[in-house]
Amino acid sequence: MTAHPNDAAPYYRLDPDTMLHAVESTGLLTDGRLLALNSYENRVYQVGLEDGDPVVAKFYRPGRWSDEQILEEHAFTLELEAAEIPVVPPLVIDGQTLHEDAGFRFTLFRRQGGHAPELEDRDTLLWLGRFIGRIHAVGAARPFRHRPALTPEGFGHASIETLQQGRWLPPHLETAFDSLAGDLMTHVDGAWARAGAFRALRLHGDLHPGNLLWRDGPFFVDLDDCRSGPAIQDLWMLLSGDRADRTAQLARVIEGYTQFHDFDARELHLVEALRTLRMLHHAAWIARRWEDPAFPAAFPWFDDGRYWEDLVLALREQMAALQESPLVLFT
Image (cartoon, rainbow, N blue to C red; front, top):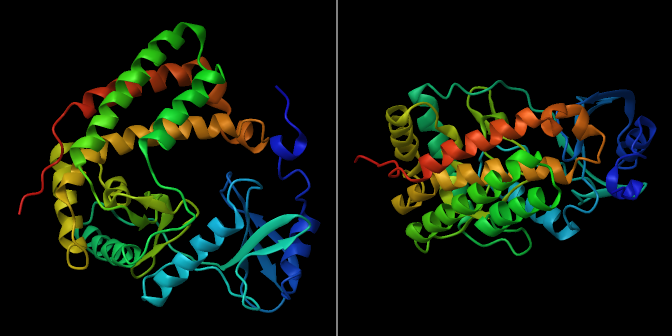
């Protein structure tokens, strides 16, 4: 199935001249330098300026977020900055954070340097826990009105439907995947039920180590996926290793976290469920974007049968993880 160019390749008109013109439409004067940064969902470039440090320009994928959803992300980030939490907020130019030029919506950010955090360091985990607790204290103050929630339906069931309807799996794996996917979601839905009526907070939403920069402390970047959900969503991706390692890491993170915000231990039932949803959603995300030329270039293995064999194997291992008892906090 061939989509209209605006759907299949929404950035086909976003050439260097268009990007530079967009940045200059805000009143900044560029020096012509552009450096593509590692982003596929949006297009993100470092842009040199004639007078001052470079800025980072994010051109939003057409049709993904509404203006209201983007502005709600910006407002949340600015709210965190006002609470002295180290985030990288959008630049406010003439009272605006969201701009449009030549049909593309975009936002500018200051450039933020740093390196990956050392998550094996106990003090780093404590520090991160404190700041995430502060983020969630702000996030608990009011709900999102426009941003979506993280749910099994949106990240799990809908992702499975995308993969099944797109006929991405090799024929010899289709039956196994269909059966496995149904069993996985039964366990995910069960985990959600066991967690009980947890309080949904405004979250960073995608707090993997790549969205953390360290320079004399942490910086939290890229809130493009901020949404409502359980607090544990912003914590579980900090954990790695075997069960003993993850238990020790969790204890350190929660030690810092609870200095600023309460943590409901029932949410530990969700850790492996959230991991499962992330695996399914990631595969479905690539499938939905496959006609954007950037995706086959960045993920050439996606339409190779070996990838799907490995994914089915990983999901079978995840089935076992879903049936284990949750991590336990020792106090």
